[in-house]
Image (spheres, rainbow, N blue to C red):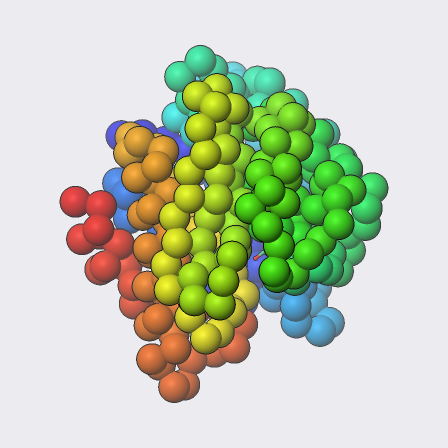
Length: 277
Ligand code: PXL
């Protein structure tokens, strides 16, 4: 069985980071090993969340794995809470990256033109350095702009604006950059990427839905990770991840009593399993 390592926080309530990565990656028949970076009572969009930092455990955990000779078919990082964690994660990539596995970095720190609580421009610069060590990075437009020091344009941008961001993103060192939340009109929304090895662009759009929910970036990245680990080729993995994310949003919109802090990704699991057959 393929085994990936995902490094991100546990938000006890919040339907994001590890609480979505674990069930979603399992759907692909891939073992999800975890490195929890922090335990929060909720994700940071709630007021008054608690935060237990686990940075000081990270190196002990990987030392044990190294002694046991444990290896991974993929390394996938999401929300990371401090500069020190970024440095430790770079070291984990150095220790566990091989010629045959992949490194996927989702530089979780911002959305809708704003940084999340606790992050600043300096963190974005350091996250950009971590992105340089990845095979695949999946920032949203806001995260890309903060990492690159580029102007964030919410809507009405040109294809050249996106292509310029993609070139600068792969310039950080990542082999493939995939921008999420890209839209050139009012009807469609999707992802637009660039493969710096093949020198090819790729994109995939679906009809825009009339709502945005927290946690969909983590759902996208987790399903992309699962599909890549399962052995799907990259473009197919990207389409699976977009389709599953859209299904999660559709189901949530059709559930009148849904919570307001995340999507009903659990109800879309039968769709995902059917989609990857
Ligand atoms: O969904 C991204 C995410 C993950 N983890 C924590 C967060 C967020 C976004 O706000 O706060 C703790």
